[in-house]
Length: 181
Image (cartoon, rainbow, N blue to C red):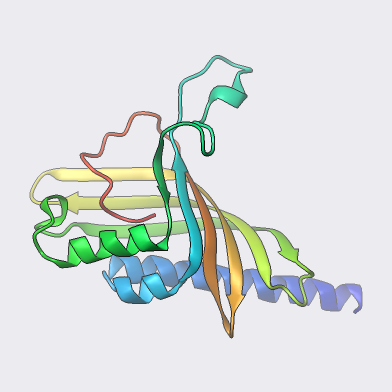
């Protein structure tokens, strides 16, 4: 493969992944949860560590530790499916009436592909997000942060195998986390 072919393959892969992430945001905004769940690998890890205020230079303490400390989320597909089913009952206290949500995804960055870009079966990508949520008359939330996803090839599309969500705030100002990132 020439350098030019490799560059084209990389650009096409980045475009394909961006479109996948934008489609996911649209499905969540439209409350098309079964289609969203189909985008998740059966062995997904959906993880959001908590953030702490720390002194300069103490970056190793800034986030709760993987599998050791409490996190905002550390879920698999079964738990995510149960959360969706609970919302769909129509009697979920935090989502009745339902929230109006807009997901914005930007700065999609390709990190790596396994085994190669041309034959990618798994890719790691980073992006930034902004989630706007409005409930009832007066509740408004903005969630801003970063995500790191591992996407796995599933036929002619991708599935989310791992998602690490990092909020840019350390104090949760929202009354609940009943929505998805």
